[in-house]
Image (tube, rainbow, N blue to C red; front, side, top):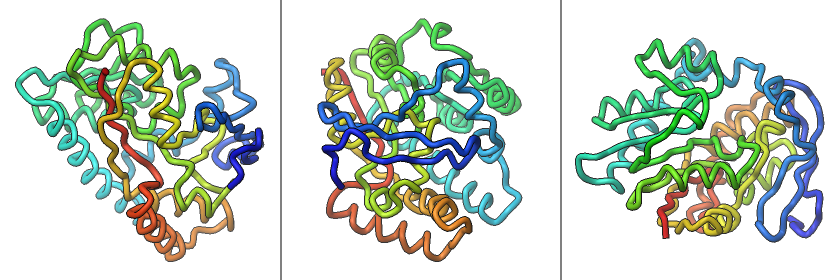
Amino acid sequence: MDVNKTTFLRCKDYTVSGETFDLCYNQERDILQTKPVPNLTALPYYYKSEAYISHTDSATSIKDKIYQRVKKYMLAKKISWLNNYIKGEAKTLLDIGAGTGDFLKEAKNKNWKIKGIEPNADARKLALKKGITLCETHAEINTKFSAITMWHVLEHVPNLENEISFIKNHLQENGFVFIAVPNFKSYDAAYYKEHWAAYDVPRHLWHFSKEGIERIFSQQGFKLCNIHPLIFDAYYVSLLSEKYKHKSTNFLKAMQLGYKSNRKAKKTGEYSSLVYVFCLK
């Protein structure tokens, strides 16, 4: 791939609008940015899809049931990551972009003191039914936490610097930050190109590489402590990408592609999605 071009790819919004957006490469940061960026008043329009709320709790189709099994496994996995880094009794957690509250519910069940931010009113209502009360805005948070998580959320935020500054100001001195984002240097991204579902324009405003996200956090005083792969993402993203590319879901082809991507990533480290663990320098 030629990362020296200003316009890296041109992608279509397959979920809501059908509009086309450019992915522009920032060489200094080694990240891609979606352009044009919808203004803040227009942005909610691009989220008007069941795919962004109800599917997380649905278990009707075979695909939904598989998704729910994987989700249950990954919720436990995420909690185990937190417990590996944060010891002792004072386990306080802030989840930014908490969705319908499943992760926070699991954390609460594992004796974490929890807080969550979720701007979507429908998602907050679903979380409330599970006994999880979420804040609507960052302004409602006024304490520091031993762990701050963003599971596939950072790519959505309009202003990276402001978001990372907020994280820094609300992280305890010995705390850890867990950031999960897609990796545009993965094999499945290179294979599907403009049809790669994890570009998800314009909802995903930023597209990260390992080098890029480390640079951005380092500039605000963070140190990269570890990276964990999200191996199931390659399969899920490949399923959607097959649909975007061929207008039909080829389950077998997607599974083969996801497996191939993960196999190559064992050597390169370039998994479809990665969890970055940061702490303050």
